[in-house]
Image (tube, rainbow, N blue to C red; front, side, top):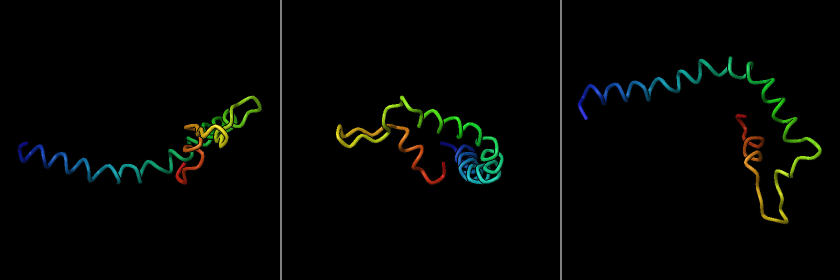
Length: 70
């Protein structure tokens, strides 16, 4: 890998956290209706349990709901 390619890769790696920091407020505001609809879908009456200890089964929804950033 050439020096220029390494420099570009390092620049992109450095700018990704900055881009996330800048975009996060807009994504939080825009994502509120989507998050509300998703939680309504997961917690509907006929939905399977997201955590079933008897069958040792965990749904992927459990990680989305329990993640502190989401």
